[in-house]
Length: 264
Image (cartoon, helix red, strand yellow):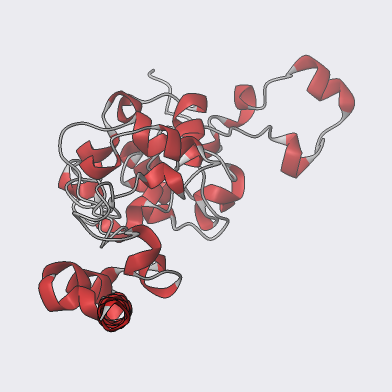
């Protein structure tokens, strides 16, 4: 009788153990495909604008486990992103949605966070101070990262003939007062600011009226050449010694040899 009871108990324990092992083996294991069954918005954002968060990793690379089994399954950005001044700024979510990391939305005024990535413009503004340097970066680059405004949104063109396409011929946005230009810059653009000089030069009978402004005023605004840079010493040395300034005989460069008539 005792042997029979012992066999029954042993069988029952074995049966329970077997059921337990079956139950353990049947526990569900989450896969990436399971995420979208509950989370509709985030997978759609990743699919559309995930950038490297789409191509380099998947959901479970960031979210290791699921609540309540894993309580802290939302990582810090700094767990992966490091070794850059930008990543030490903090409060990443104020600009970035981790499921659309490059769709940056800007609210408030920003400069420090911008120059932590865009150091080039910051150096240009420091080296060439202008009113542009006093503004927050997103005063011009407003609302959405990558926005590049037209100059004429704030600035009136120098003349009616000028358009937005002409601005960058001379001006760079982050150092607008450091004017540089190419050798094929049209004199018409110069005349937009220097209208009286252009009128004088256009009316001149001398050969200077036949060359472009940038032939003499080359490369950088306010470049004023010496006459002998082109003409050398066209007269005897004694004459140059006596009249060291060419304009004493030839009048100004924009109106050569055109002296006003003397009053009688």
